[in-house]
Image (cartoon, rainbow, N blue to C red; front, side, top):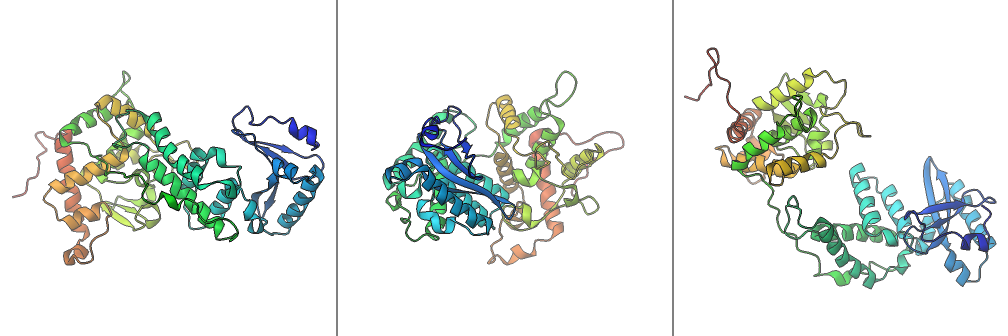
Length: 424
């Protein structure tokens, strides 16, 4: 459309879709008006690909131009200058942070923090876009300490109201950790922007010192007496004899329980990390939360489970392939909700890891060996900790597996040609 005062005034704001909408100028390519999906704000923006990446820069809000007595042609001229800078590889945001919106600052933060993992990038963007949605097109300088303080406490109330009395929360104060996390991300983005524009006000919410929500330790492990109920639920089959939650998710849940892996460590496991010859799962440092490699000896159940999955013959690099972009199972939340409902008590990936640790602690294995199994840091002051070798880890892994199988009601094979080996 051709931008005029009248055509821009007719654009609905907030947009009925509830999402931001972009309208482009016929006269100047890359010059647009961004209409908020939740407020009455309309902003002049420019957008262009620079070095293969899309860059969007806010020129200013339509209201600001009108209040300053500037015309549409003035906005078009400023936009043309910004487009010129983008075309020549210059970063207009470096000089425009004083007018940067929260969306501008978020985009720049994610783009320039090269050390952030892909998961962290998605998580940070999700926190800002979910909990500060109405602020995305507001200049940072207009976000006041009062607004931040009010929003901080509102996030907790909103999350608590949405979750209600769900039994799978594992927390006594729902919403507290979410509010803390969302505000920490907002603070990080603000500090990043302030470091590039000294004229931008410093982080305005220092008043929140002492108001951060207390988040208690979560009680997540499955009680030993409940493990058989869990095992039976995971192995439940339908009328056709197929696993009710699917073979892949059933195997994933058992692998989580019998290895103590974190969810992503298990769901993104690759066949190249499974060393059948040595009987070891070798997780590289890039996939572990601790950023330390983990060589975990397989217990008999884990080995049998992986051998059976390999025999399925699925042509995929992942042990648990999926249809999503990553190529593997991502977040099996629905399956865990199904199992939780069937068991009558809450289950999630971390509760299975905690169960592995809890059962392991009850076995007669050295504490250092248990830490080695779950890739916890070993105290450097503990002289014996550094000498935990694969043989000891293998014994420990099998001891935990035996204890888990006993509580799950997994019977040992018996028959005329099979005998259970017992220690003398």
